Image (tube, rainbow over the protein chains, first blue to last red):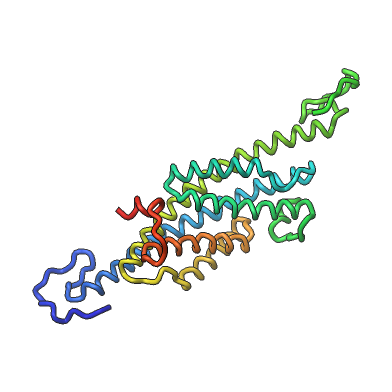
Length: 136
Length: 136
């Protein structure tokens, strides 16, 4: 908070905080808290969209996993992954996302997908909770 | 691919592969390759959407980071993170995403965001390549 008790009372009011500037730091912090809450509402909406897109992505990769298992194709496909990472790099640059982060993100997702594919091949422990409904 | 030269011409062709059934495995694999390519086109579209949403999410968290830096708030906020993770768990269950994966995903993103916030506070090395354009 901090105190500015010495400030003269005739000072104009801050248009942003609606407070007299004898507590500019308190007013600023209040305004900052409002802005923070505002940003967080957008972030929460984006996160909901991300979760739903990821759910949809895993529905596709589960179909890929079943195809690979049925045709005895290896769970990982380094050539495809290299193409995906190159493409994501370009998309990241276009959209203003750090390409290094985009690459880490893609590797994070692909690692999870390969784990799913291994389970479908029977290489890993069965996890009916997340693969079950799609296998029927 | 495989050859079907020996097959009598009157044999029915497989409706899926367009091949005669003397090479069912080859036909199956061809059909599997088509299905795989089809799934991958959807996955590529979803990945482009994910990258753009992540770019937008980081624009919001960069604003949050600047607010936190300006008001001397700590980069991490464990209470907010716990709320986000609980909410993402619920959204994951609703959309059919493995909630354990959703939580790992959220921690992965939040770790990156905290790294950005630390840079904005000057706790970490400056990386103008990804924070620069938003700071002006």
